[in-house]
Image (cartoon, rainbow over all chains, first blue to last red; front, side, top):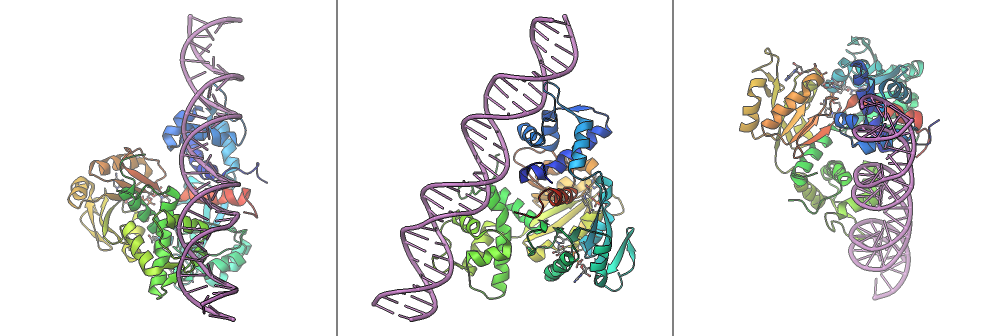
Length: 212
Length: 212
DNA sequence: TTTTTATTGAAAATTATTTCACAAATCGTC
DNA sequence: GACGATTTGTGAAATAATTTTCAATAAAAA
Ligand SMILES: NC(=O)c1ccc[n+]([C@@H]2O[C@H](COP(=O)([O-])OP(=O)(O)OC[C@H]3O[C@@H](n4cnc5c(N)ncnc54)[C@H](O)[C@@H]3O)[C@@H](O)[C@H]2O)c1
Ligand SMILES: NC(=O)c1ccc[n+]([C@@H]2O[C@H](COP(=O)([O-])OP(=O)(O)OC[C@H]3O[C@@H](n4cnc5c(N)ncnc54)[C@H](O)[C@@H]3O)[C@@H](O)[C@H]2O)c1
């Protein structure tokens, strides 16, 4: 299924490249060099060339990369040529902000269902997305073939909710709770831990001052 | 200032350890092994021991680590024994959610000032945090000695706002916009790019199936 | 006390990622 | 069609991070 496993570090950069290629495309630029890309995305140009080279020879020496064909290529690679549905669980403070933010503006991902325990939220529509009670979680995930869940519930219920989602066939979880949830090996968790990010930032400021 | 530069990968894990040590402390456990820690934070136990060893011999062979002294140590290292003030710029959708979320519950970071261009927001208080007009940005950052900014403005103004914040003395930026902002080398940017995270997750599901 | 079991800390090995540096290819111009 | 300027793609080197391994030590059990 994969084109001989790309390094993870590279995979994490692909969306960054993809995004900037879209910007170039929208401004009718049709060529770009690794140096120019480097300045925009803040990744070393050699790293960019190396990253691209895992997918074959995408550029032309002495010329650079053709924006349109590169864009088309990455769109395919990132599955952005199809719409991907995701579910959001926990329509609270953060969940609402994410619902309201239209991921679909920037990417081909759409939150197509949301879930919450609160009875007053059940069967309402928030920012155009239907909210279901938790009792329908499994059925909706299965019916809508949803493989990706955004988890914005309180930490205390995160593991239980995760287990339920996985029972419903979910394969990827974007986890905003601070809990490192346990999942089977065929399920991928991407943690977004905002408190951590702040603490890490503070650590770097205190300990890695004025260099690099 | 630093204890002979710790690897970045290690630095990023410190808040995760710190957080779990607090949980152990609160449940009156007074010792913990790297294996137990490993299960909770989902980091290999050898990596944990390696990480800790950069700070010296913190544990006892055949025994493990003393929760309280380890906690005290990391609290110091992470500067969590003092309160750190941060500013939030852009009180919109996401900014509001972050304001509402009290980082201070989980860490010694507090949003002490927020800023927005919208005139109707200026000089109001949201979730206990005063909102200032952008004209006061520089003065407030300087007066309050704020070194950290959470950036939740639209992408189109991200660079300008960043420049202003840096002019006000800011040294670290938690950047929620998709723009990779340009900053001088003595300023640190931590990017939180949610669209990217989703796309990366999709990529991993499609290309790194059932293993590792 | 002695033995067994648990567990760290550190050196070494391994694996992953980034960066250097340059030959080869291509473009645009004369 | 040759020339100079660019810019890729990639070996090789450098750097970073993880994992293996095991001697040393502490606690618990015998
Ligand atoms: N809000 C932030 O800015 C922020 C920042 C960092 C981390 N987080 C984390 O994100 C998560 C959500 O934070 P929040 O501020 O939105 O909390 P919140 O309390 O506002 O929202 C949580 C929502 O989950 C729902 N919920 C509770 N139990 C549930 C269950 N069993 N099944 C389904 N839904 C359930 C609640 O009804 C509520 O609507 C938390 O884990 C928090 O630690 C939030
Ligand atoms: N909301 C989300 O879930 C989400 C998800 C991913 C990324 N983001 C990113 O986070 C950022 C904010 O998103 P949002 O949904 O909160 O947008 P938003 O439009 O709701 O909020 C932006 C806020 O910034 C303020 N603002 C505009 N120009 C400003 C300026 N020059 N100085 C100060 N304030 C200014 C606006 O008045 C508004 O209150 C965007 O860059 C977005 O791409 C948001």
